[in-house]
Amino acid sequence: MKYTPVQNFINGKFVDAFSSKKIDVISPLDGNLLSTVPLSDKKDLENAVKAAKAAFPSWSKTPIKERVQVFFRYKTLLEKNLKELAELCSEENGKTYNESVAEVEKSIELTEFATSLPQLVTGEILEVSKGVECRTEHVPLGVVASIVPFNFPNMVPNWTIPNAIALGNCMIMKPSEKVPLSCGRLAELLKEAGLPDGVLNIVHGDVELVEAICDNPDIEAVSFVGSTKVAKIVYQRATSNYKRALALGGAKNHLMVLPDAIPGMTAQNVAASMSGCAGQRCMAASAMIGVGNVDGIIDKICEEVRKIIPGENLGAVINKDSKDRIEGYITEAEKQGAKVLVDGRNTKVKGKENGTYVGPTVIDFVKPEMSVAKEEIFGPVISIMRTNTVDEALAIENANPYGNAASVFTQNGGMARYIIDHASAGMIGVNVGVPVPREPFSFGGWNESKFGVGDITGKSSIEFWTKLKKSTTKWNPESGINWMS
Ligand code: NAD
Image 1 (cartoon, protein in one colour):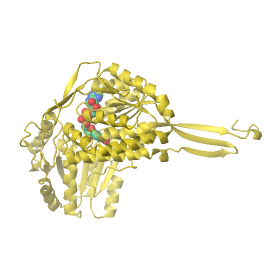
Image 2 (cartoon, protein in one colour):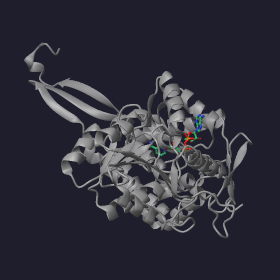
Image 3 (tube, helix red, strand yellow):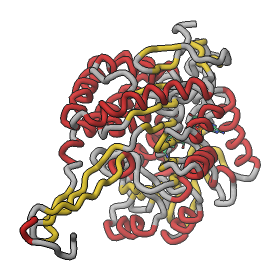
Image 4 (cartoon, rainbow, N blue to C red):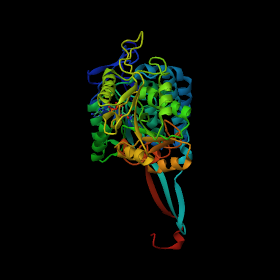
């Protein structure tokens, strides 16, 4: 085992969980055992919440300009430790080293945004009547929780940690049990940056722990990122306990390719979007709709995809179950009459035979009713459908229950605007394969890709992590009694 067993991080210290239940942490790159992770129970959570509650009065009263100093130092530490953090991320998640570097760089950008929060949460004040002022202030909520998925072990925790904590909250973080190592390092760096004990607590576990988080009366808000199935469970359970909740779910992102698209650029973008992070991104292109004759562009896409080599510039998928599930989708589509143009099944990487790799896969002549066209595959697979018109393409995109992202490739500005207006997704790209909004813009989908109001990052996250205090004050006693008395 390469690393010591993972522990919870409570009140500034690494501690064992009460339960002796644990599971192995296996590297998808080569199947090697990295560590074990505890499956904590309600008692561990209660200790973490107790620590967070105790830290809250002092942390929330610390002026925001002082609070963000921790994040200036944290940002520097992320930069200083980038290589080590990227290696750890790659080992536990299976993505390539370069993808992991990009992930940590995004964490740095998220932290940079948090350091700008004092400029954005100034509140408002107005003299509403002679000598009478109305004023709003953003007030932290208290103890909040963040539950995260396996696909970005470093970045997704940083979607919530810097903003929620800089805004004055204390947090319980629940990492994915599949990739628990990166979060521990983030906690160490935050401690080194001067974050007081108890402000961030990490509790490891699975379903039982998530349920306990949703039920804990001292947790004010729950943010969740993961599959739609679990997002619905968490959103429903947390809100039925009267908590504020924001639950981001899965995705099926459509790229619409028009005949006037620039072939080389389009092919590169499509190939990068469907294969980046082995297709395990909620922003990955999973379905392409060719409008009219785009055969030449599809040939170029296949050319680009064939340059993607598992174990070199393509990482592994998270585990064997995932590999089997993805390959099952490809086989089913083939049986139903689709044509596999590039086949990533049965991929083995020399010297890493126990790694869980799926090669990049392009499936053409997919029909909208096939599973590969409708469901989230979460692997390096793109399913190509064809239509005669843009409206037919939009009808397919609109009919899908998800709504994270959609993109169009065209040189026609009017057509691009038409697709921005009519696609039913929260994040739209024009000639961009992965339309992730960068800070200060907010990240979040629509429909079954997100439950709750607001977005998880950027300016929109301020509303989620704070509540507004509205005060009305009168400073002219000489005016006597009036309608605001
Ligand atoms: P997941 O839903 O299986 O797990 C997410 C978290 O929920 C984990 O911490 C896990 O321990 C917990 N969990 C799992 N099953 C649970 C249950 N039955 N009850 C309560 N908690 C449970 O997701 P995953 O496989 O880790 O991540 C992949 C999914 O996340 C994909 O669907 C992907 O699209 C989605 N995702 C979405 C976004 C977004 O922004 N919308 C971002 C990243 C990932």
